[in-house]
Length: 518
Image 1 (cartoon, one colour):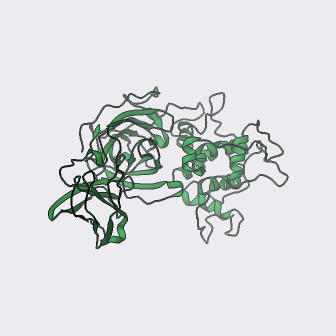
Image 2: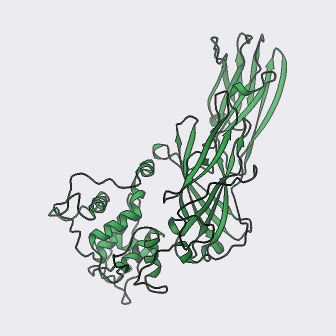
Image 3: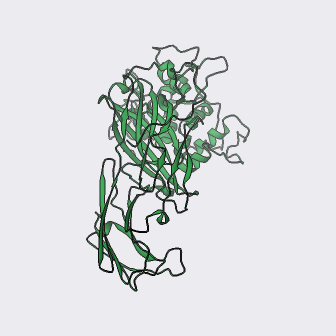
């Protein structure tokens, strides 16, 4: 690790029933306690720092429970990038084990570059327990992640930037990091230099630099670990910042970059060769580069190493169970622990998908309407089908100003949800209506949920139907078989699905929660 953990700003909006010192409730049944930086000053030689995320998780392995939507605005966690993705988005992930060896977590991230005063990055982190007591008992811990900082800063001064994070509920966490003087102007002009920069995408940019002239002849050799196929945009120049800027000749063979500047160096010049090794690094790996500088027959040989820290998880106290009620103060008057739909309904409330009815009940046995189901699905899946950058900015569906339905206006209840569902492929009825107050049948619920959860992805339905009353040729068989595959429904004891039967709000909660967390 790179230093001592700093104390981050205190969090607000602490749930009344949350554990002592806890932060706010986060999606998937966890909350963030704290975010802090494990190194508060970076010099030109540093290549990464560490961010520590304290969190607590809800017990229960039946669903994929963890902490989601932790936004990092000025640093990007690094792992084995699987991008690029649309609009410069990158997806990455790593597996992290805790210090006790009892729990394993999956850390998933998506990142995008931001052009600001300094090249910074934006990322979103999600943490999920894979194995160990965390998946059944819940508990609290800390994950420490290596993060990328701006690779260089070209001005002649240090820069302090606020490191911020936030969760899905708008709570923000703040720390600061000071970037040391970077760029070529900060290097010792009396001796040749070799400088590696670990870039945010996991590649390494190497600079081999001479002291200032004069010199009658000068050449630089930069030995980097990749082959030439891994070397991107090699370059060389002399006289940066002067009127006499010249470009040298550069070549690459077997990962060795050779450059020469004809005519030597003037008194105010120095010769710089740079090459990017795009072979990439993963946590725990290190890579060394070497350079040879020839100044009028005097050879200087240098070497430097770039290392990316491992992500780790540690716990200052034993892993202890966390009660479900500690993580979510939401309750409904008509459900009790142990009831058939208690878990799924509680999940809907904790996630802000349903606030229940005005009388404090959920209405577990009441039939659900098309408008209500559309609203539930939009709250659960709305951001999934938005461009990630747009979702970050808007975080909501923007309904059309002109209604596509003859029985709804932009001021109608559930109008936004109905138009969002229409964008998923459910256009309403042939007469142009949506019928928001009409009850939902089991087959309609299957189709609604399938499109919301699986839009744009491939699903190969089985050749044989799991239900006695649903043949594989049934028009909605793809959606029904998808619900079966996720475990959302096994049908009735007689082996039937009963597609025409109206669905209750409790049954709908079971469908949505199981499919969402599958």
